Each structure stands twice: as C-alpha cells, then as structure tokens.
Image (cartoon, rainbow, N blue to C red; front, top):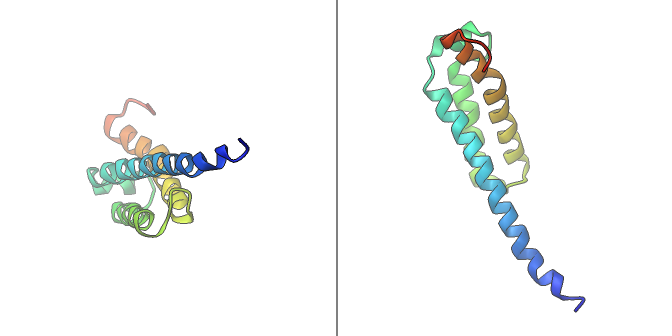
Length: 104
C-alpha cells in the first residue's frame, strides 16, 4: 500500500511536463508569428528593438526549447520570458500605434 503512489508519480510528472511544454511552445509561436506579421517601422516608432532582433530572439528561443531544454529547463524559461515581454510590452505598443484606440 505504501508503494502504490510512486508507481504513478512518473506518469503524472510526464503529463504535466508535456502540458507545460505545449503551452510554452504555443506562447512562443504566437509571439513569433505576431512579430513576423508586423511592419518593421512600427518597432522603431515605439522605441523598442528592431523587428529583426525580436524575430531572431523569439526564433532562437523556440529552437533552444525544442532541442536542448525540457519544459522547465533554463532555455524554456528564457523563451517564455522573452515571448511574454514581447506579448505584454511590444504588442500593445504596436497595436496602439496602428489602431490609435488605446491600450486594449
């Protein structure tokens, strides 16, 4: 009875890691696709890194997450951080620049 819990521990951890990895890759892919579909001059207008730099950062983070890192590895965490900075800082600035309607 005391040994029944460790049998399922590995399976549960694998499923949780898979869900975190899929979520991480989706967030990074959304940020990269959004970056690639924007105009390059908008990045300079809001005072951030150029479009090429953001695209390179996000693409390298996706590749490193897939190749060298697990879902909670250092490259995955850096990739999520870079994608969230883009989505929460740069994306609203670009949207405000193009729409002129405000933050959201």
